[in-house]
Amino acid sequence: MSGRRNVLYLFDVDGTLTKPRQVIQESLKSFILNDVKSRVAVGLVSGSDYTKIVEQMGGEEVTNQFDFIFCENGVVQYRQGELKSVESILSYIGEEKLQKVINFALGYMSKLVLPAKRGNFVEFRSSMINLCPVGRSCSQTERDQFSQFDKEHKLREKFVEALNNEFKGYELSFALGGQISVDVYPAGWDKTYCLRHVADANFDEIHFFGDKTMPGGNDYEIYEDSRTIGHTVTSPDDTREQLKQILYHQ
Ligand code: M1P
Image (cartoon, rainbow, N blue to C red; front, side, top):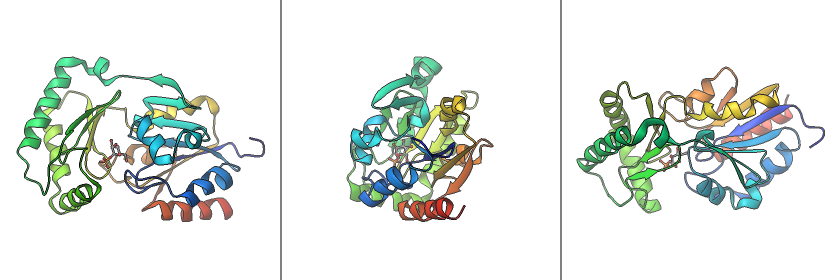
């Protein structure tokens, strides 16, 4: 696209472009794909898998308009709907270690008493395992209820601490996912992983926008990375406001 600055804006999805697990608002989508994209390159980087990102962006005709789609922190990379590269946590750590982590996590979660428990407590993805005490098949109401309960009881933080203590030397990272889960991936396979895919483009600046930029959050490493200029946002509306400030007041 001619006339664009040699700059990349990378966006987290949940909490940054959409409410957790919800679909992006029409106005924000159009603002990013028209106003923002006419000035700079745009990309998505999420812990979620491709199917969920496509769903939350409102379809592949939308994701195809982004210059970069980095799923599972960039360990799975798509362009124009085509899978470009993928790595596997299973080949990386092996079945034995993987099962030890899963068994420990299931044991730990089995002892928790929560407002609700549903199904799909362990989701196996190409690059990571997602551990979810309430169960990923919970309803939106149960998700919100768990999230509130977790804020009060710091359940996931304690879970992450227990995992870190149990698996010292495994070279795994345990990070708070979005609202209800913990992501487990090989050390270094956090969102900074995606930056290797844009190294050749030699962008003058890479801006990253995310809501979980505090230590322990899954946006922390890329937000702090010296290759990016980090922006902490509090909601999709805040993302839009910050974008306007940066784009129109530079
Ligand atoms: O924001 C990205 C996160 O989205 C989901 O988190 P949760 O279900 O906890 O809200 C998960 O897909 C998680 O893996 C991912 O990091």
